[in-house]
Image (cartoon, rainbow, N blue to C red):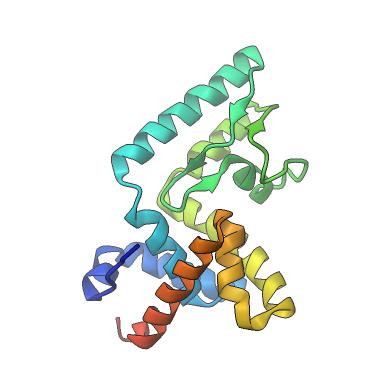
Length: 178
């Protein structure tokens, strides 16, 4: 996996960068960690794929509300946040973020999911999720905090390794100049 990081990357995502900076400060997480995950999640998932995922998610939730059929725990939005993570963010703590399927939706929950499809709310949910992982891990293993945070976020160790490389690249080019 090769990702080039340059000034174009920052200029193209300037709105997201501003939101990420605010969330990094709010949740006490390194900005480069949030931006690194953001780069990884947005680089390989184009808008038309997200549109299809969002449509399938909304239809699945409506089917759950009407007929009670389970909804696949889709990941939605730019940062690929799972449905259960969104519900947990809004205070529905009885959901497991690693569940394959989700049950028990109502129209209010549908509205919360729909709201989380848009970039600012999606980044907010994503930032809090990363902060929960990072702030716990950094106390246990500060040297491997970035790798382990990436692994917990995505579920793959290779994701954590790639994230560490991107964060190191971001640190090297000193993104505070952008």
